[in-house]
Length: 553
Ligand code: GLU
Image (cartoon, rainbow, N blue to C red; front, side):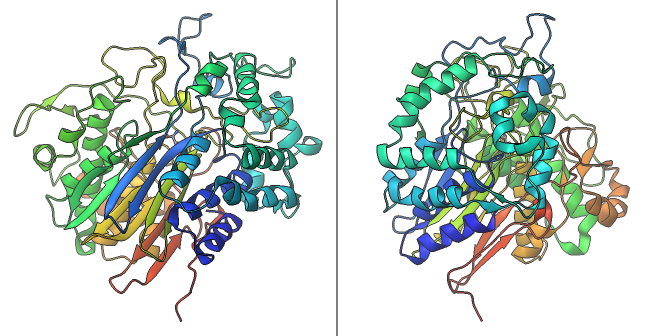
């Protein structure tokens, strides 16, 4: 996470604000300094632990599909086949109704002590004064240069003089400052029921593209009514017990909570340790492969499909999955999804599905002086979202609807439907010990978010690492594909340990950049004396920031 955003959150805590206040202030600041990952054009999931009541609650601020979006919207009428993924990303079609501002408002209303107006103030200032461009920001801009150049409003903002801002220069966003100021003064209706709603709908229906650009940028279906109808959902978190700890996460529409939970429940069947690292990592890869099979088969927006959340989180189901895992040998993947009815070892067949989520997004973790905690992951989906900036408003619109499966299918829980939320992998996670916050963790990284969170928890709880070590350690992500994608450092360190188990590793990467890094976590640990450790990435994405109000020692 970004240093100036962390500093803004810390200031809120220092002045007596609680974790929810600080989380919203930090998220707003991230919208300024990480505009390709966060911001009011997107959505996210907010998990809150209230120390006074001992309760964990969540806000689902996921984007929704427009009310008139047809199930075959991602089939190109010209070819009868799904749009190539990259063409679908940079489009009006991919834009979901944004949920971020509604999330901030709900979080402050329900859990916070301060007004949105006050909380937005430091971000207005930050956008006005600007921030210093680092290598990550420049590189992310360059990675998006071709498509940003296709949208003149985006090029004007992010490619001044036709180039990505130079490292060390100051990047100001006066349009965003004005937008945030207007919302601070007049409220979120400015966005959801005012002029901005009309502007968003217009842009989605008619992308403002450079006519010379070859990008097809197909239009979408969103109307101002869709935006006015947007609502966040308050719902119970997912819960599993792991090694005597209570692990809470985000229920569907995110697959994060059920898939992290099922993976941990499977791992609960084994003793994991650093002494037998090959065995432990093999079981980790098998656990997530099996949990991903179930995620792909069963998880979608519960308002539209019957998601067996309780079964997916049950220890019995996980135990049955574990008995299909060979402790000595990698499974033949894709493994079939588990049979929800059968006890013991049984499975139904399922095809391998393509995974198209990408590596945008940002995660923040907060614990305050009272022990309240927030895990909040927010995103505009791809780095740079849809590539379309709302003219004169200074923020990018998301491409979250590309998280849907493109080809309609009656058996796919993640098929496009009007008003539906696309399945997410975001996994903001709060772990309690004896009713108090012990760990807060989350990450960006598309579907690797899930494996990243599981791996960090395993590193810390089972493999004897400290929290900073658990976050920094090299990562691998097994999502029920034949090969396991792994960071080069993971391959260098563990390929030999995993070879006897027949676990094929391939270097990670992604289609828009050459980045081989998996995730970018932000985590907090609170020990039994109340001492907090805030751990951010030392290297990934140029490094993150973890701060505490009163540093020890
Ligand atoms: N759209 C992704 C999801 O909801 C997150 C994007 C990312 O982290 O790269 O799972």
